[in-house]
Length: 266
Image (cartoon, rainbow, N blue to C red; front, side):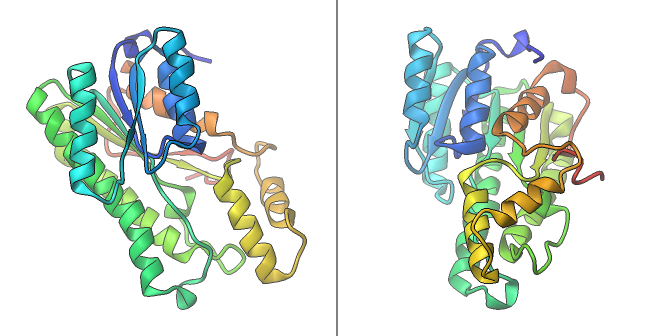
């Protein structure tokens, strides 16, 4: 595993850090010596990571944050600045997903997924960008989308609204990446595939119920289709996130990078 000593002491905020990919990303930044503020709608497992980090005298803390609220987002970013003196890196990771084809999706479901996935990333990224512009020495904005944002999942994987919202997130990355590059704020996006998280377990349950097949069978078939030959771990996404925050990625802006074991070779 590569190490990035330049990340030591950097001020990092991670949204959706209570579990899964967000928790893995926050943990990896802590390992690199960064000062990390983990945020989520509820603590989840974040408190365990914070406690472990503090025992090692590493700066890590948790802050309640609803990414759909501009005031809570501003408050969390202000908290990161108060704790660490500035904000160097934000990882916009918070998201949600529901299983249904578009023709069965409700307006309430549309509002929920677009609000958390698209609006949440928009608020986190733009409010963080304004703070970075005020500081005047650049920064990194890393947005977690999904492979679903680069394709149109078919009937076998009915993630219509989720895919729509992730397409929007990729569009946000491109536009913001171009707008902020000259100011030294590099905006990039990471896209995972089949990640071993509670969300994929939920997808499996929903899909197998719809198709009247054994629980676990859909996930097993999906994993079998991964060219690299294993399910993706949250830590795989964390590795890519810290790379994009490092000096090695100083000439990458407005890009969407896949981390999917070969499932999305484009």
